Image 1 (cartoon, one colour):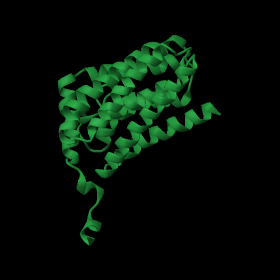
Image 2 (cartoon, rainbow, N blue to C red):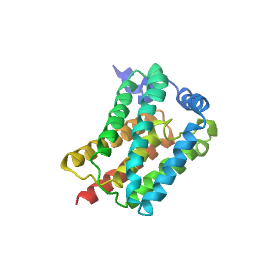
Image 3 (cartoon, rainbow, N blue to C red):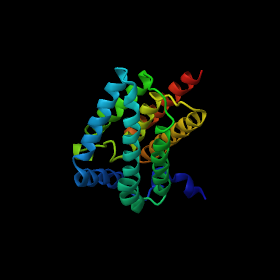
Image 4 (cartoon, rainbow, N blue to C red):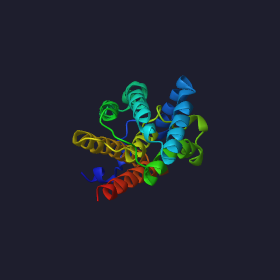
Length: 219
């Protein structure tokens, strides 16, 4: 019985950190330069929303639906599930997010400027790819929107904070999407922390920023 006390959470992982990061390297090579293009599009979206272009949110929602679906199938289901069966639930989160973005696009009103939303969009498009070299990993293992779960979820949270639903149903859907994005970040932060990766702070910080902004917005 006392032997169980000697185990750490990382001892129960079914894969090594090197195996996990190698997935991104393989995925980036297979889909290059799609990840870079998605990051550029999200950066352009962040600038357009910050400049007050009210109609920028709708194409942004269509983009988020597409990249969420691509993450669910292209990365999580095809690459991550084979080394971690529990990732099937993660794939489900991104499938639900893709469906939610499509439905929200039909109920959203005019966009609103959000500092926190812009910060999250910039984090996802500019900062996230730099986390790999900052952690002494090769740049080919960088995480890009549409190819990796974390920056895709963070970009979605950023866009949500710029979005103003025009109906009651839209507002419920807005909170549901926020919950999915925050949950995806928390699941990732837990996994990274279990692997003893310093990068675990990044999705956790993004979730905290999104929740704080959403609560202030509601108040």
